[in-house]
Image (tube, rainbow, N blue to C red; front, top):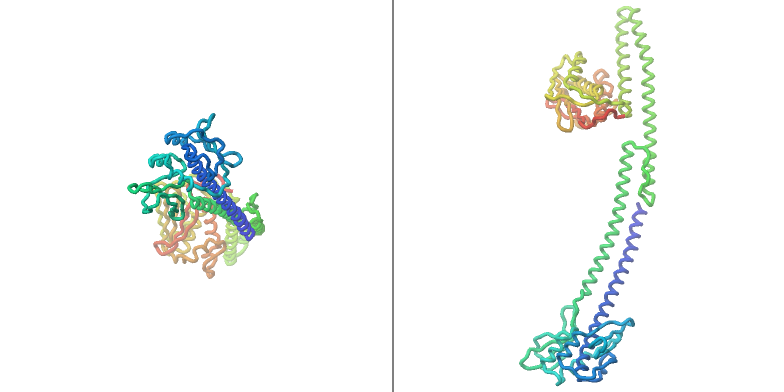
Length: 504
């Protein structure tokens, strides 16, 4: 796991460096682009102001202009012509990075100028003053000319300055621009003339967007690594659960680059395989011993039967007691073999439709000598047809009924209920009951709650274990609760959907 965490940190560090570098490059490019756009705007202002001076004949040479005018007008133009020419100007960037402005027809331009974008000083004020103080235009003509310029903005503004043209800096938050206030008449509202601002995204917004994209990419990388770790964790949990359920062998392609989880999983698998081998050897030994015991038990039966005819009555009673012990030993061997088959899952179960009332009635009649001193009440639904393996369901119900008979004082109650998903048989007695902390112990093989009991009253400790395995192979379970009569209540529940011919 340490290797996985180090790999996560390594990816985060490398990803962080890449993202920070990318963010820096994007912001640097954006800043350069903003600077280039600002330069273009200033060159455009220079071109438009210079065009007005040259076309109107106010100036024939413009040393303060950044443009090198290669073609100049040969005559002067009025305001309407100038505004139309400026509105239809051709402005484009050349391959060498310089800018060219052309006014007039394409085949016969009136004015052509070229400027380099490497200029850093602009003389907007000088050109603006020449237009403002020129007598070639009226005030209204000058306003029309400024309004026709695409790169110059003119807007009314409240000002108490008394000079005709004043350079000012306007500050709005973190943004600022440089322009001029023109007081062209005492009774008119002054106007503010400045470079027209394009509607670009603010640099601050771009910085925030770039940082947001970088953080998002970082979070995606972290989330991807965490999903990978979580997937490996779930896979490992699934493998351990499969091993806990008894699966031998691991699935191929365990997702673990460092090998830590894979090594641990293989260790679990090796341990599970070893435990399964030990359990298999133990089951085989118990089954072999149980099978081998049948032969000497049969010989003892035959020998005791022969002895009964050859001894007197006093010895015959001893022989009958020995026959009882032999029968008890034979029953024990039978239960051990039955439990071994159910535990191993090799017992074939054949499902069929059974009338539960007849099955329970047969169990009560067969065990009448053990139940005749008790009152047995049977409560059945009108529809008592169930699907189960008849032999093993009979065995499970008989074990539960006889277990209740051992501890009941006066009465046993058998109740059958059902719903759309399951069938349920409750067997209750009015005996001493079972303490809550001891309820799980009764299903442990050869486990008896009271060691002082004799085998006749306490059994072998396999009856309820067999019931639990039968319920399991029927897709159900056995539950223990307190009875309304004060004793114990055993509920045998099995599924309606477990309808298959074999469960081996």
